[in-house]
Amino acid sequence: MLTAGLLLTLGLVLLVGGAQVMIRGATALAQAFNVPPVVIGLTIVAFGTSAPELVVNSTAALAHQTELAFGSIVGSCTLNLGWVLAVTALVKPIKVERSIISREIPMMLLGTAAFFVLAADQFFDRALENVLSRGNGVLLLLLFGVFLYYTISAILLAPRKTQHDPFVEEIKDSLERRKVRSKAASFALTVVGLVGLVAGGRLTVYAAVNIATALGVPEFLIGLTIISFGTTLPELVTGILATRRGEGDLAMGNVVGSNIFNLLFIGGTVAVIHPINVPPGGILDLLVLATLSLLVLPIAIRGERTVTRLEGGFLLLLYLAYAGWRVATH
Image (cartoon, rainbow, N blue to C red; front, side, top):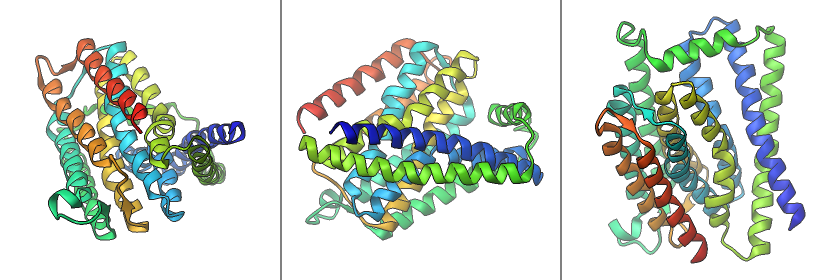
């Protein structure tokens, strides 16, 4: 048990560290080939920050341990709203940009609804079990493609409106602060990061299965709690740092964007690799996620479009009550 715990910790460290190294290397490589900052932000940075979740869940799917993947996907999304967003708002109220309210939050709600409807076969189709099939996975990936196209079009095809877009400005500032590296060094960093990601993913899944076996708990519960918490730590740190710098819109966008990526891209990818069996109680977990997602919209548009400390505390209490009940009744 102790060995499995140490391996899990090492796996999560390799995942998070590998993702950061890969992002730095791939970003520097893209800069060397004169790729526009906005494109770098919408591809390398956006995909790289969710790389730990993608690698862990893809590894679990390849091993046919899809209940672990389901718990990790849903757990990460729930943690983003009830933990990352809540704690960030408690540190400092979050100002929400109009573009997030009009573009990202509606897409997150659509993605959550699509994932729920496709997963709840017993409720909608009166099937014998709830399964996200490969066909469902393709639909989720198509929805993600629509979101990506819409987002890129909104930024690239309307330069005047996005000239001072906070997302674009942050990417430009971040790139300007980075040390210039040669193409060879950038490529080496990218490879090292990818190796760390793959190794971390395998270690994490292996250790999680062993911990679940030792404790006699379902694998999906380990994914719902320990793994999802470990993989969302970067989002928490990023959110707190951004809010303290007065860039709360970036913190909000990071949380909402991460949920869209997890549900549509990672969920779709995992289902295509291997159909996802929804574990007992999984539909209830999705209902909790849907409830938290629905609460975000009125919270974001209320008053001066600010997530207050009181609202952050409310989201945190909801999540802690749910998590405590889920662990106690597994």
